[in-house]
Amino acid sequence: MTPSMRKRGSGTARTGLAVAIALGLAVPLVAVACAQSSGGGSSQTAPGVQATVSRTPSFTRDVAPIVQRKCSGCHQVGGVAPFAFDSARAISSRASLISAVVQAGLMPPWPPGARSPAYVGEDKRTLSAQERATLVAWASAGGKTDGPARKPLAPKGAPVREGERVVEVGLPTAYTPSAQPGTTDDYRCFVLDPKLTEDVSVTSARIDPGASKIVHHVILFRVPPSQRADAAQLDAADPGPGWTCFGGTGISSASESLNDADWIAAWAPGGQGGRLPDGTGVPLEAGSEIVMQVHYNLLNGKAPDRSSAVLTVAPKSAGLEDVHTILLPAPVELACAKGESGRLCDRNAALAELARKYGVEAAFMPPGLLYLCGRSATDVKPSPVSICDRRIREPTTILVAAGHMHLLGSSIRLELNPGTPRSKVLLDIPRWDFHWQGAYTLAQPVHAEPGDVLRVTCRHDVQRRHHGAHGVPTTPRYILWGEGTTDEMCLGLLQVTRG
Image 1 (cartoon, rainbow, N blue to C red):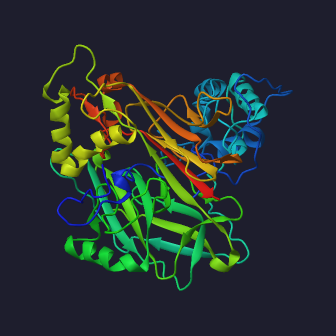
Image 2 (image 1 turned 90 degrees about the horizontal axis):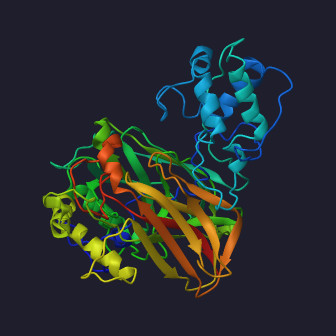
Image 3 (image 1 turned 180 degrees about the vertical axis):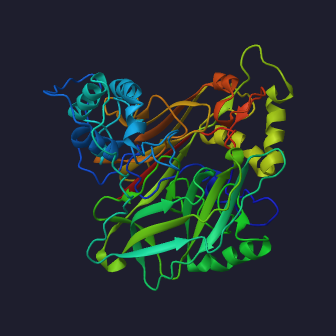
């Protein structure tokens, strides 16, 4: 994995060392719960904390507002949840289930564990002790209703501040994804023109996936004026809207630094857009275009898609501090479970399968990541635990943290200076769920000095393959870092300022 890696079928360089293929940060994705942030906030409280309810809660007065603020964002028709809270009856019929999952702290989903620091907006994504007690008391009293359910709150973008303006971009025509034989993934890049006549800083982003059931992720990449011709050439050479773009965009001379990826924003399942910390923004120069990379996961079928994005931008004269994106990939080397056998349990056969599906460059990723993380690429020792360290090169302030794995992921942690008195956990998700991803703005940004160490640690569970759920392939095989949903990744992401 070197800067000279090439895109299959062309002479253009792959961007981001081909690791800019996973989730990404939506400028600054605040959280992953589907609760709507526009309802009144409440302080986060651990499930074990008790609160009292002096009377039997009223569904209309007490319960319906909580469900609207904290549940209906996902539990609606067409939402990501398996059933909709679109009527009082639908909610009442699941009163016992609601009581059980809120007491266990499983709902609303909040992946960060107790070791994680505080994040901006956390209080609006979790239940307070009083809210939890209200729901439990209502359910214990029989889950009765005395009026209708409330409609889900409409999603809201970040407020437009003085001096800012809104920029909307999206697919000009619908695209229906397709996949090569034997694969279930289609990576497609589309050129979008924000029509910028001045240098700006992107201060917030909300990405709206069109066909949300098949959109695995969306990433927005910067395309400066000097690269517009390259983007146009790639677009013209591929029939239909956009072009196939496994890995990065495929645009020549694009930045390939893991320490300063060309990302503007991104979306993944469970993510919601938000605003970067005050005084910061992602720089975008006048005349730039945007490449929207959409990863379609066709395990859920095919459908026409017209994904879009809404950005707020501030002029360069606002003097905002530039935000950079750091990518922290780690190798994935998962052997077949004990007692399993098959052709693809051989690592070399698994590498050849990656090359068949995604091009020969894909087979360079596993050894490249081993080299990057200080391991031998010839004497490979498979493990369910993936770890990689990276040293900070210059004074850095960490604003946002995120992690990404696929279907076999079990847990992920991002740390600064692990194993030292100065150790700080940036993000800890002890129970990974592929369907609840996002990024988290730290309530207190963390400063790092040159020589400090960043670490990403992922744990995978190959036994999940035996259940065959959510499209996990049941055929035994050696699992490597790969670009498909049924392959695996271990990726930490940070948004930072420098200096």
